[in-house]
Image (cartoon, rainbow, N blue to C red):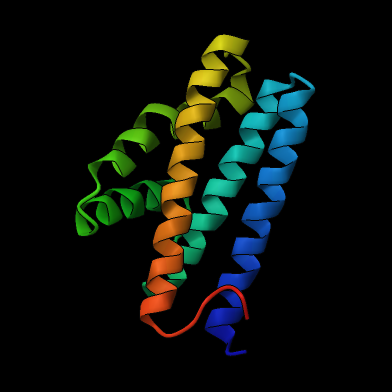
Amino acid sequence: MNPVMSEIVKRKGLADYYYDNYKKYRDLKKYNKASEFLWGALNNLVYALGVVYGEKVSSHKKVKEFINNLSAICNKPELAKLFAESAEVLHANFYHDFLDEDSFKVHEENMEKLLEMLSKILSEELEKRGTSLDI
């Protein structure tokens, strides 16, 4: 496997790992920790997509810029909307633990939708390049 694909597989694996941990902490009602793991899943999925596009997405600012650009490129304004409305709130919740259960669930649902959309874009982009994560 070439180094680029190796990095994509690594980052997608980390995203899946963080997603699994998010579910554990959500079930324990530890919403600040669950929020951290959702952010980690998003961050690694965006990093993998960045590698596909030849960009290094290595900071919060770059994640935001990448999502906004991807939203425009793919003509999917919902990507930027979900990121702004929920991903950043969940990221802040890890540090400040301000979301109650009902509020967490609203942002969790939005984040799951965002992650699903990004995973689909990643799969489509890899398919266009004649490869997949099923290597």
